[in-house]
Image (cartoon, rainbow, N blue to C red; front, side, top):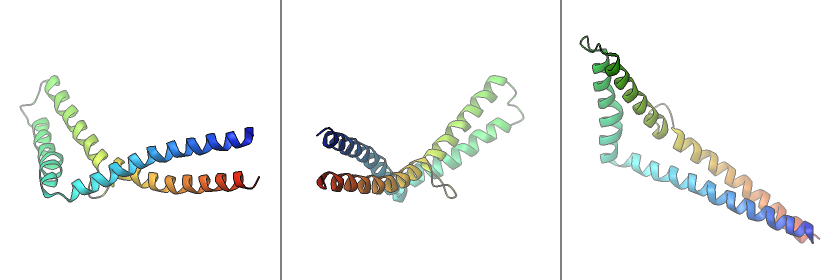
Length: 125
């Protein structure tokens, strides 16, 4: 009886893990749809990650930018832009959201297989 309970607890834990991984997968699918949206690409990828990054970089490297606090502010802005680009992805990098979604898809498959094995082992008794 205790082994059956243990199997039930394991299955419940797997179901919780699957639910969590499905959230990551759903987030990846949502980002994929956003990336296909022309307005999103125009505002975020072209406007923010490219044009704004170039503008801030030019301010940082401008000869009249001499105050340490200005330089620090521009570096911080560039770091933020970089982190958003890393999160969303770009041409040569899938991005954290897409990578996490891909890993979640594989993990869900493994979890489902483990769950099926547990169910089969519980019925064998």
